[in-house]
Every structure is written in structure tokens, then in C-alpha cells.
Image (cartoon, rainbow over all chains, first blue to last red; front, top):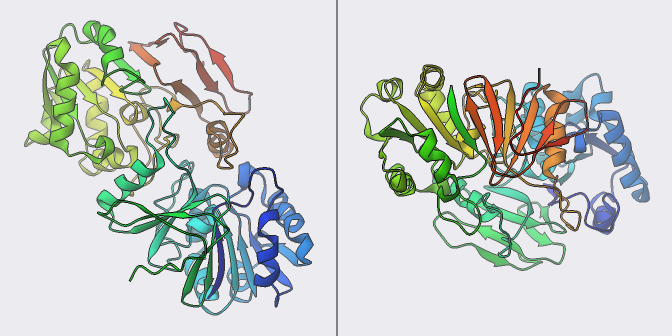
Length: 233
Length: 233
């Protein structure tokens, strides 16, 4: 399994995918064609517009990008892809379509078989056991919250630290994750914007120069440093 | 129908329900017993702990508060309640239990029949057509996102304005609501913390001294002032 699982597609003051390009050069070194799955519809844009954005973003790598919606047979398109990029947007929308089109297992099988995977935000969220630690609004009702389960934990992308100066009374991210863990015994990796997980076969490394926040059920959360290997066994 | 539908139970620098007490004195003037529904489990606390908190909060009004979980027959308890308070916490958890216990319609019927309703946060979210404009994390999978539909719009509680100084790349609240409306032709009322809707029969008034942000599908969002009557027909 070869995957880059990023908290966000874009960091402040930088263009779409720009901060990931050096890593993507290596990650996608042996592939020419990248299959883009635009179902999360970043900011509500159309599948065509979103695919155009992905194309632009990956242009410096010199890859050919096609959107999954352009294929007559999406199952075949995923099964035969050498590289797959699932973009961000709304995780409920993404997961609903992957399930309804019967693509969740197909995607998992393709990644297991060696397709190089890139996920950003919602596309990273679906790499965990479930989408239950998404930050997104439930704008559609998916048939299940189960996702790819590339590893035995969940991702919280765009992880935000508690702002001790805030006067807002909505739940902090940390409280939300703890509420999830009251009911689900699942480890959660809070990935700050600018961080990504690099999965190389069974080895999962935190990259991007920032620490990540780890929530193990029933334990106080703790930080791991960039370049740490994630191993919860 | 008599309801107070509040963005939050608590505002900054004030204790639980404190800012609502003057309005609750009037709202609950003719009732002695308040049935509290603790299913959203604020901050993950137990039903007993949460009911204790509600009791404390309503103590200055001199009401008798009992938790729904204390009753053998929850359907009967709701149907015979003179006043019902649904507290905040996680909307997915609240909605899952209301549906699974067959209480959503029972609650609607009780409110229609004249039970005085108080909702805060998640308890306000469920007053709309669906819970799809919640800010909460999907920590459990409800059988449906449909809610009470006391009126023909949705609530976004704890509404937060876009912070133009933020460097965070996660979606703003406004973008999330627009993404919801790309796929659902439903008006959304963004209720800022400190605001509530006062429902008196067919009349819905914004109270609390703050403006609210109104999102009508396909139109730019706009503000309404405190004391405005909501009428989208």
C-alpha cells in the first residue's frame, strides 16, 4: 500500500496542492495517469470544475488527470487505475456516492493491489475505519458511515487546537473527539493542516514538519512529532 | 405551539441557562413540571448528571425537573408532559435515540397539543425539518436525519461569522450552509449564541438582542434584527 493522506489540500498563503508537490513527485514518480474522484465537490463546485482544479494542481508533476465521472464504468476505472486522488469537500457527499455506486470496496481493493493513493481532507477521512470524525455538515444521508479502513484508526483532518481565548460555546474539536470515543473505541489521529501520513506498505509515518495529536480511548491525548512512525499495537 | 428555541444553553461568562431565565419565567409560568430529555449528553455526561444540571439551571424558576430516562414509558411521559426541555450535546446521538425509541412523532404531537417546549443547541436543531445543518460530529449513525419540522426551515445553532483573519482552511459556516443548499432547497436560520426564536402559535420572533443570519436558497444571505418576525412565505 502506497498512500499520502493529507489533512488539507491547501495551506494558508499557498496554492492548491502546492505544499505537497515535492512529496507527490516521489509518490507518483512511476505513474502517468491519475484518476481523480471529485465526489466531495469542494465548495460545492461541479465534478468537471473540480477535476479541472485537480489537473491544474498536479500540472507541475506532469501527470494526466481524468475525473471518475468521465468514465462509463467507474468500477473498471478504479480497478485499473495506477494512481487515485480523492479530493476534499463534503465527506457525507463523498461517502454516500462511494457506497451507492458500490465503489468503497473496489477502491480499497485497488489500493491494496498497489494503486498509489492521494487523499486530502474528505479523501483522507475515508481512509480510516469510519467517517465519524469528520468536521463536515451532514448535507446528505449516506447509507453507512463505514469507510476504507486502510488502518485501524480514524482521521480527524483540519485538526484545530482549542483556542483558550475563544468566547464561543460550541464544542471544541477535542471535546467532539472525546464524545466520539465515549461511544466508539477507536483511536483518532488529529492531523493539523500542513501534515500528512505517508503510508508505505505497513509503515505509516507522520510528515509535514508539524506534530499530530493522538487520541487513544480512555487516555489523555498526546502529541507525536513529525517523522514519527505510527504504531498503536 | 409555545416554544423557545435557543442557539445555546450558555453564553460566555454566564452560568447554564442563566441568560434565558427571565424569558423562561414567562414561558413556563403556567407549568410546574418540566420533562427533560438528556439524550444529547452534553459533553458526554450521563443522563443522570445531565438531568441534575438541568434541574440546577431551572432552579431559579422553581420548577420540578425529571429526566425522560427515569420513566418506564417514555412515550406516555412525553404525551402527558406540560413542558418539555431538550438539552444540547450531540445532535446525532439525540436524533438516533428519538427515532429508535419512536419518540420523534410523539414529541411533535405533544408540542402541537400545547406542551411548552424549550430547546437549546441540539434541542433547537431538531425543531427544523432536518438535522442536516448541525455542527456536530457524526459519532453515531441515526436511522434518519428527519426531525420535528415545527416550521419549514432549518436551524444552524451556535452560528459563527466568518473570521476574515483566520488562516484555517476548513470550510466556514457560511460555505457549509451553502453546500447544504446546493443539494437541499431549505431555508436556514443562523442563530448566534445569545439568540433564540420565540414561537407563539404561528408567530415566530427572533429574541435576545442580536441579529440572525438568514440563508435562502439561491440568494445572498442577509441579516434580520432582534424582535423581527420570521415569515418566509
